[in-house]
Length: 465
Image (cartoon, rainbow, N blue to C red; front, top):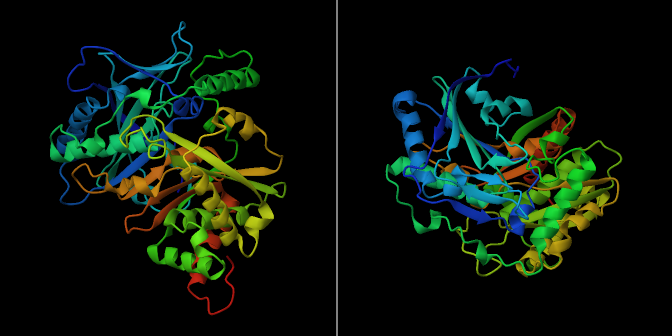
């Protein structure tokens, strides 16, 4: 698809305030779970919604409905109308909502091909970036969120957002989006308990001072990368600033039947099947890593560091499921690239991921204070692989009242080679988003699609995974 010089025309930029002004300020301290993400690029996602003959008029019905319901929703999520700030007298940044704070909402139109952009085919990453708003981050302050709604006349519309990752994680972001959609669809402001956010930061204990260890790491890194910069600057230094290659993205589907075949493949090649986790996520993640590592042409890569990021709300005991903020943490394992590429690469990775899950299930964050030191202690030639999102988010259920999304794209993975996301697909399988260089994506595409096909034709002989 050819890129237009001006793919989007801005129609309006407005400020959306909570529906009733809060009488007082709201201040939330940052926990160590938040400070992990202090210098990361914002989280960005796009929801694509199809228009059809029965869909009401966009400007008369849909857009006013989205604006009004956003205002109602922000009353429940006041920190998202606020900002991240670092007062000169404060030892660390804080989240602050003041009664006059608002969310920037951009309304735009595009003549681009909606069906192409919302397809699974290979696209340049730059083709989707015009449909997420910029988050206006300065040295001293950052909005929590910005939203962009783009109309593709006679085709569809998108709802894109940029969220400051320091303020909330994927689960909290999804809780907000589902709340906004529910309020819009039902035209009332009540939220069920599961979607009502809890802001109490005292549920996260930090007797070891992990928060300040993480903050000092970011100050040190800022000084090393740019000695002229303000070490207390809130501007990101990780993410898209490090991207130099021209990258492409595509979406790949793993159906429920594919997952059954992958599970059978592991069962047939392992002595103790009960010793490993064979969830749809583990099988899909392991299979995708095998295909990714085999598609890489960089001969300098001899090791792979695999990350497993988990929600710790359910593991630390006192943290409620609807806690608002960040509450994710990653374990990782470094493995030989040749083991991943081997004939039994799938089984090898399922075992490794199962070992990481057992660590997580122990509910122990031992060594968390030294997280960044451990991450930096890596051998040259190590390729990092992590995955964003979760099938548990069920993003395709975000229905504002005019139908479920046709497609959901996690734009944040565009910042690096090997960026990966997972989501529960509409039909109950797993949807994998992948970012690679073009020549590698072509190889990955062939390996991924044909590898799944091969699973269907195993007649006693060994399949390639």
